[in-house]
Figure (cartoon, rainbow, N blue to C red):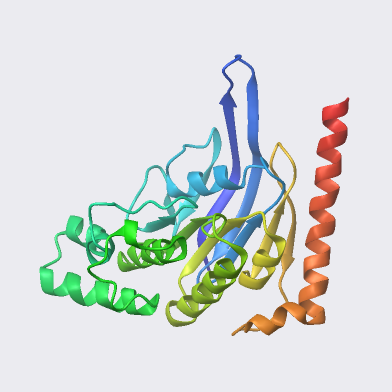
Length: 262
């Protein structure tokens, strides 16, 4: 069963100089209920554009996106978004940030506290409830952002390179955290990254995009069972999947360079 379906989605922009830019072209694929689907590809291939279309932040030029059968036409509480940049409210504590959407929904204080505490504990931030964002590290701020998104109980979590600004060690820890969170919630996730190892470690299916205009070049199924300890990154199935994706992206990078030189 597909939670999110993209059908013949295209997105065109008008540049400042007046010419048309095709960001994504005729993209169709389903994100299945309870899976982690990953968009991966060269820089500028339209990965983030597709995620913003799924969030309802952009409207496709043609085609449509449906979430559980409903056409996506605007942002909604049924989609949780986590960006690369830290989007916390600096004047609110960790708890108040996590409770923000619940407050908007009008939930009573006792229920807000119960839900927020559950997700604060889930992302490993118990004891930091009264702390403000400026007192947190980058990894901790992204934990709060993930907890805030999950607290609203969205049907799908949309993640746009959420660990891209973190150092390598913190990034690995956050990837492991996300998998632990997924093991508990089995939340449907559409994840964008340019990091092939991250995509292979996290994803059930990887949608490799072509260079602009962005299309789905190939779907790669990750043949690694869950749960996935970090040690899987040294196994032959992991290395072979990573090699295949690297090969596909390299083809697109070389094609883009060739096209630019013509």
